[in-house]
Image (cartoon, rainbow, N blue to C red; front, side, top):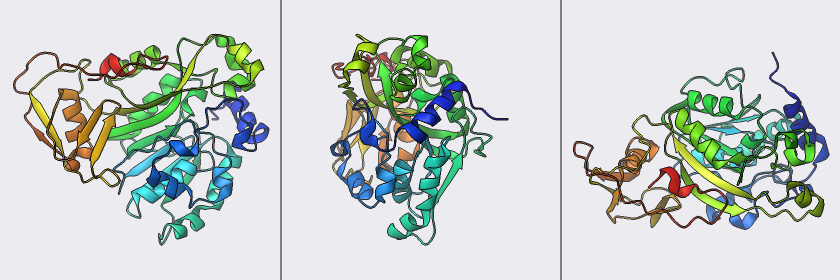
Length: 351
């Protein structure tokens, strides 16, 4: 049975027929090339123009330490981020790209073998499937089968966001990670906006309100979310700006781990984390989030949640954690950065 709703059909129309190039978007939600780290720029430069010309992302949600992982790209479009991940996971890894717009999937599939050859792989390590974010089972994605889920400005388009996050947590392995960029609003957007194809397609109508997202994830068993990047979204189109009024939007990149050991506050257990400098492209320092920089070989006091994120995930091989949770010292002194976007994201749940 099809999962398609009026919202799905509107989005498919906008991205399948209305937009033919990223330059046709009416906001700057699409990330500029200079926002990519250098090692990602170099991979994107190896992609076919047809893949990159119809890229509609709002960030760079591609985490480090992906070698050998199974990665799922939700809303992969023509495959830009999926192919970048394919290069990073290497021939021992696997990337699944899922999208509901068949025309964009056709582009991605047409380039699979050529891109694998460009990367020096004997055969493609990508697999592109048609499906809906709310129903990953029908697309053949099994329970606890994925190491990392990435998504770039797509979840806002889904009409049932709770179901999307439930599905993500179902298919993630224990210790797995959701790393996504999306548009957040500084308030709940009016329901009637969702029937406006342009507001919906430009990722404004379905923008997440941070507090609702935080509560939803806590209810699903993920009480600690980490922001890694943020930027304000500019709306230069006068008509569109008038329609959204005083509502402000930001592109935010968030990481969330599937860990049963996380608490809803940062608790102090006297733990120390030392980064070993072994993550590719992060020889001198590793950024867990926007206020946790781990300088190579420099011990850093961390809360229990941060210690878990570094020791119970794929990052464990790159860190040395001293101490455990046998003795508690109260709340950990949080040091979140000043909030400079509509969502008070960084200081709500993470240290």
